[in-house]
Length: 431
Image (cartoon, rainbow, N blue to C red; front, side, top):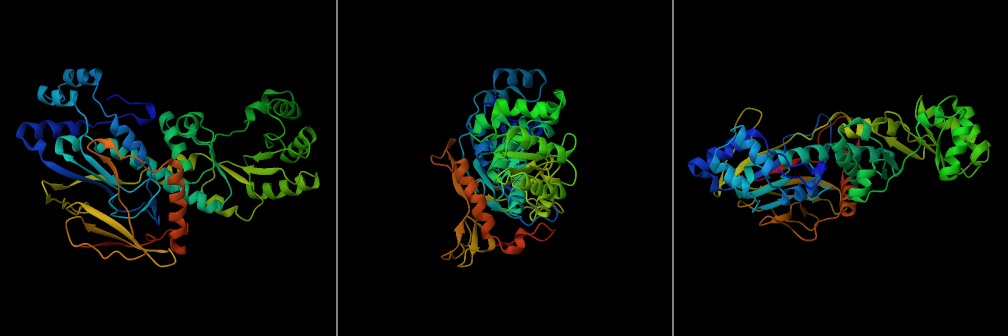
């Protein structure tokens, strides 16, 4: 399984290859099948989810290969037989993929991703699809709540040190998709053209013989537009020293500890008294959407968020599943208790009021009764891949950022609450 980059490592689970080998042996591997990815429920208390990772999945799938090293390992460990190894050696996904575009809101039962192909083509993609979509959707969903709470103030993604080194890059992308302004992750900046930013840490101040010497060195190297970290020692003295060194044109100060709301208020008063009325205040330190919302009335200009973002703010996975729903045109469904699925390929549209407020998510069978489409209704799935090739003109990362913003604006006001509640709009099943 050769990956184009570590951040899109291609995955296959043992049991997927076990099913593939058995299906090839009994002749069912060539049956045309439809698999769907959906979430049975949102994380506890969440009112909406945001789709993330769609483009990463399509990019990874286009390059999905079993290389010589992987085939040698499978042969040595006897995971599959020679006939299956032969198929894997020539594997190229040749089917179709449809789904919700990145940045689209989703709700319980939304058919987020539909994979159509032979059973042999599609069954090996479960782990690839779910590992990307579950991770990125969890991060985007949490990040969108934070961006909404920030109410237009910029947020810096700073979570690279709190997650796996490869996940850090995709997390930075997901945060940018959600509405964050910049990231401190340079690889994300290189790979996805995301603006990067950063400030010095306490270690830089501690390195020098005095706080003043540290500030002087930073200003000499980076200019007065930089951000000085003022709470290594005494924050009041730190602010005074920062303005003494940089002058009243200092770009920003950062507060990384303590009661940041109270400290930001005091810092604003002190900066204004010193004449640094345009110096911005950046706060960080274990912030999440609740802390950001609580700081809305404080004189904070930007936030730095790390741990809570890369861990999904308590929901590190979106809980999506990848289920077989159709075989050779025949609907199939799982009936296990609490894990039921609905058979048949499904489509979805979202109904809206004339004002643009979302009313409900309508999920219906592609081959069943079709819903009436009103003037303000919007189909949700788009073509993503045809005959194994990505569709031209897929939404860009910036397009998807705009989609997140538009989706949040379309929610009923109750849907933007951070308190626990039911999904913002109901999912209605036809057929």
